[in-house]
Image (tube, rainbow, N blue to C red):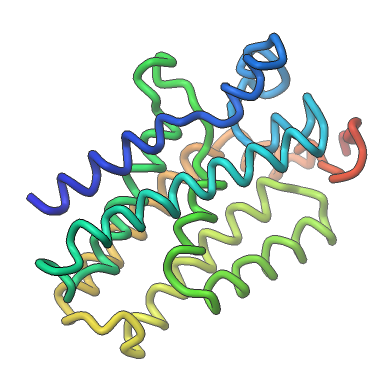
Amino acid sequence: MERLVCLVIGYVFGLFQTGYIYGRLHGIDIRNYGSGNAGTTNMLRTLGTGAGAVTLLGDAFKCVIAVMVTRMIFRSTQGDILPLLGLYTAAGVILGHNFPFYLHFRGGKGIAATAGLILSMDPIMTLIALAVFVATLFLTHYVSLGSLLVYICFMAELLVFGQSGAFAMEQRYLNEMYILGGFLMLLAFWMHRQNIKRLLHGEERRTYLFKKKSETK
């Protein structure tokens, strides 16, 4: 029951679509522009660096706040599995972000929300994932590639940190965490399936943080 409650809490927070709301405040539905996605990258390409930054922060911190709420609710009764419940909450946020019912299930791809998930778990995990993303973006200018590598990195971090005792949970709960983390990684790859095809064919669009125009290789 606790897991279901966490998923619901997360989904409700995930419904706060930063990019969509920001776009509406500027007179557009961001889903009708660019990639048709309500996430950070499309905001960056369509409305510029400032809009991208606002969307990234809004979508990341809605996940952080949702996890904090979960911890406050369950700290006294489920304190031994808080990391797992936090991951369920983050999964709900990502699902709410990707599939908001009031926008006909057309949201983002969940990467900024995932950044909030990692941020809420451990500062070292956050720094490692950030380094992977920044290095990939700097070297290739492919946001999608950086996002996918971050998910692979996150899954590896879950395994390493979990088995090293960082989450202080029994193995059965760790295994449950690994399965849920694997599901989120597969979901991210599914949401990026078109990007993956373009990457494989050398057709993926490059993104430059301080330019409104991006180049196509």
